[in-house]
View (cartoon, rainbow, N blue to C red):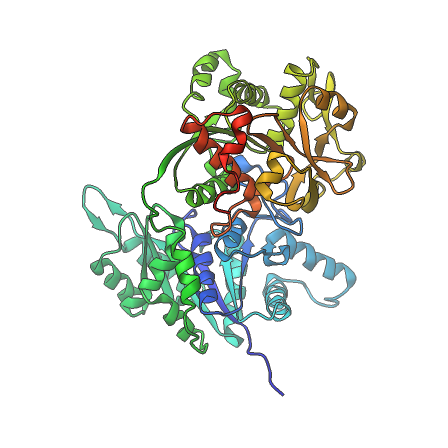
Length: 557
C-alpha cells in the first residue's frame, strides 16, 4: 500500500521593514515549484486581531481582496492568484483574530480543562494543527507560508515560534526577505542592517536557508559574500531580488540563480523536470512583443493617494494592456478635485482630455462621489470609453438618472436619506447588524443579454464574477431608466438584480461585480480587455457611436 509523501513547507519571513514584497516572493516560490509540477498552495498569516480584512480601511491597509468563496482577505492573495492562475480559498488566510477566536472558543467548551491556557503550547500547537491538517486535506506537496509583518514584531512573534516548532518534526525551508540599502553619497550596498536582522532572527530560533535581498540595483558580489558570511550560508543561497519594471519577472530572476533546484533539494523532494511550456508561457507575460501602442487610462477614485487601494484594478489594466500590445499609463485622479472649486475643479476636468479611457473603481461612502459623477458625465458626453466597477456602476446609474431620465435628485441611500434612491440597500441587507463578512460576497452568476457590449466582451450568455457590496440598482426605477436609454445588459440568473448596465452606441459599461479580482496575467478579465481595446481604438481616432463594432472587442481572444 503506497502512502502519499508528507507535505514540505517553505516559510517566507521579512526582516527590517514592511513593504519589501514578501507576497511577490511567496508567489514566485510557489510559481517555480508548480512549474516543476508539484502541487503547491500559498498560505498567509497576518498578526492583526481583525477576524479578516472586511472592515479595514483600504486607504490605510490597501485593497481588500475577495476570493471566490467570499473570503475578504489581504491583498497578497490577489498576487497569489495572479501568479498561480488558480483560486485560493479562505482556509489559506490565517489572522491573529481567527486564531484567538478559536482558542477562546475551545477554552469555553472545556477543551483545556485544568490548564492555564498559554501562547506556548496551546496557541502554537493549534497553529501547527491548523496548518498541517490543511496541507493534508489539500494533498499538497508543498505549502508556502508567508508570515506577515516584520521579524521582531510582537504581533507575529508567536507565529514565528510556531514555525520553529513546525520545523522540528517537518521539513521546513526558511526564506528571509531582507533589504540592502545603498547610500547615494557612498555608492555602496550596505549589509549591516541585514547582519543585525539575522542576529535577531536567530535569537528566535530560526536559521534561514535562503536570503532574498531586495535592492534598487542588482546585488553585487561583495555584498552577497558578506551577507553569506554572517548568515552561515553559501553565497549562492543569498539571492538577488532587485527592482524591476514588471513584478512577474521575479520567478525568472530566481530561476536564473538556480533557486528552484536549490529549494527542491533543501526540501528533500525528488527533482521533477521543469515544464518548459509553462515557463515559455510565463516568460511571454513580460517579454517584449514589438512596438507598443500608447494608452492613457484615467482612474478617478477616492483612494488614489494609496495606489495599493486599487491593486487589482491596476493589475487587471496591465494584463489587458499586455495582451493588447499597449504601453499603458495610468493617470491617477482624485475625485474630490472634480467637485471642489478651491481645488480647481475646472483644472481637474482638463486632466481628462488626454485620457483614452476613464475608469471609476469601487469604494464606500459619499466622499468624492459627486466628482466621480462629473467624470462619468464627461465620458458619456464626449464618448470616451468608460468602465465602472461596483460604485463606478452605481454612480453611472445616478448620472444617467439625473441627466438623461430627468430625476434631478437621483442618488444612493448610502449617501443620503432624501432624494430618489436609484441605488438602494439590498433587501437581504436591511436586517443586518454586524459589519464584518455580511455583504454580498464572492462569486455570483449572471446572465447576459445577447447583442450587448457585455456579451461581445465575454463571448458568453452566462458568466460568474466576484462581488462585494450592500447597495444595488433599485428596480423601482428600472423601466424609467431603460426608457431613458440605459441598457441593462446583465442580471442575476433569476432576473431580479441588475448586474451590468451600458450606454447605447458607445463603450460605456458599468458592472456591479469586481471583474478585476479574477483577472490573471495569463488570462485577462474579458471586460478589462474589451475596455482597453476600445480605449486604444478611441486613442487612434476610430471614434465611438455606432462604430463600436469596429473596436474588435473579441479580436485575439
